[in-house]
Length: 307
Image 1: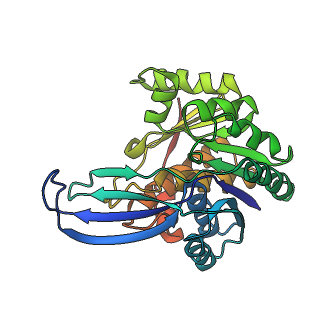
Image 2 (image 1 turned 120 degrees about the vertical axis):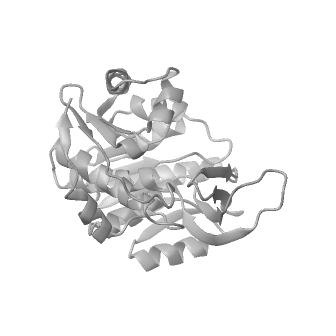
């Protein structure tokens, strides 16, 4: 089983426009609602890969039932720590050049007893999980150090994957993780410097390794990804596809990587699967995961090289 922990679920309202004109009236061509959150996207991706996923995290009384129905539809079982209030809403505007503009809401407050309740739930569920994925932002007012406590609650027999940035990532690394998955922008912001060449990027990845990760999977968007354990470094270029939305691409990458790690795959296969899933996700509009057929089609055309 692959356990995914969603700390800040959201309703993604994805709006397609001819162009986004600030200060003017904009006409919507297409609109979709997704009941999502980074770790929930991962759970759906895991399920579409044919593996067993289980979703947990925080949920909210007013509109949380819609998330339960969405997960039921994908065949993903779940158990949440419930809170008063409403799940936040994020708006994603995509123009005819596939330019994404995001307006993100902030989440509700979570009480201290609910924070403790989630730690206990993770401790219990991760004891039955081969891999535990914790990703995304924290509820309003929760300190970044909570990420350290979350990973310390994970059963030591479960592989630990983190997908977050900044102080939250540093906090998770203090508890040691098996894989960290930043994208290039997140790594630059987290480490406070720009990385232009692959050598620079590897230096940044190695700093994250030194802080407590066993593997770093660095997403480079349309350029693919890098995977390193500090000794072996691999690169996989993506292939050209029609980009309909970049929403959820990183989560698709994490989903595929977690399944491959569960299966004991070697580094090149983990990387290749991650890039295939991330690329497959961007071909869809208004959905937050990939199809298995598209994943398989892209996977067979990817080449991994050692750098």
